[in-house]
Amino acid sequence: MKYKRILLKLSGESLMGNQSFGISADVLEQYAKEVKEAAALGVEIAVVIGGGNIFRGVQGSKGGVVDRATGDYMGMLATVMNAMALQGAFENAGLVTRLQTAIKMEQLAEPFIRRRAMRHLEKGRVVIFGAGTGNPYFTTDTAASLRAIEIEADVIIKGTRVDGIYSADPEKDPTATRFDEIRFSQVYEMGLEVMDMTAITLCQENKLPIVVFDMNKPGNLSRLLKGEKVGTLVN
Image (cartoon, rainbow, N blue to C red; front, side):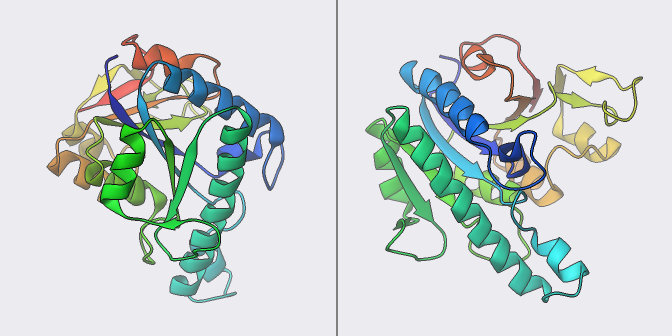
C-alpha cells in the first residue's frame, strides 16, 4: 500500500446526501463499504467528521443565537452525533471501531488519549475522533490535521464531492483547471480553499501530505491507497 496509516477527513455536509439536513442512511452505508474495503487492504484508518449537516458555530453566532464560543461547542456536539452514526454504520458492516472525543462523555465514547488511539489502530480498529479539538475557534479541518500529526499518520485524505483541487470552484466556473499535484506554497498564493489556513500550516510545518478526492465515487478510496492517481496531492 502507498500509505500504511491514514486519517480520513469527512465533512458533515457529505452525510446529508440529497437531503437538505441530517444524516442519510444510504451515505452512511456507502462510506462504511468504502472504509471496509480500505481496511481489508491492511491500512490503519482514523476518521474525523464535521458537523455542518446539523449545526455550525459560525452560523449560530452570526445569526445572533449564541456567542461564537458557545456556537462552536454546539458544533462539537454535532460532530459527536455524526461520529456515533458513522460508528454504527461501520460496525454494521463488520468493522471493529473505537470512538474517542476531545470532550469527555464517558457514557458515549473514550476520551482522546493519543497512545490508546495508536494502539487501537495497530490492532486493526477504525478510530473515529469526535468533538473537534475540544476548543472553540478551531475547525474540524484543524482537528484532522492535529490528530493526524499526533497519531503519526502518513497522510490526510479529505473526502469531498469533487474529484480534486481546482483553480476555482468547478461547480460555478466551467473553465476551472484541476491540479494533479500542488505545493503548499501554491495553496497560499492562489488562496485555494483546500482546508483552512491553520490546518494547512500544521500540515506544511510537519511535512504531512494531503490528498483531496471524490469520496462519493465507489472504489475511489481503495484505488488511492493502492497508488493510483486519484484526486489531488498537496505536498
